[in-house]
Amino acid sequence: MRHCRPLEEGVLALIGSDGIVQSELARLLGISSSRCSRIVCSLERKGLVKRSRTTFRGRRTYLVKMNASQRRPIDSYLAELYVFFLVSSSLSTKNRRRSS
Image (cartoon, rainbow, N blue to C red; front, top):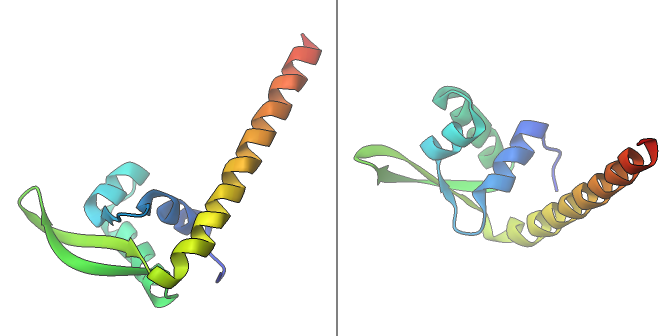
């Protein structure tokens, strides 16, 4: 997979298998719509996502989906991140118990 910045990785994590509306993505990330648009454009140039025009809550926006060729590598990457999170959470819990 091409190198992604942390915020781009966050976008990829939120897209999921069905995709997400770009305006909703910006809201979930707590960033402006213009910044979200730049991030999604960057991911689109890297070939990781595709955008298609849609209407959401009466407004025009984009539906952002993973490229079919990228779904499996991204899914396995996200699974690795999830396992890392579980392991690091478990270790920090053990360390807190020991220090108590």
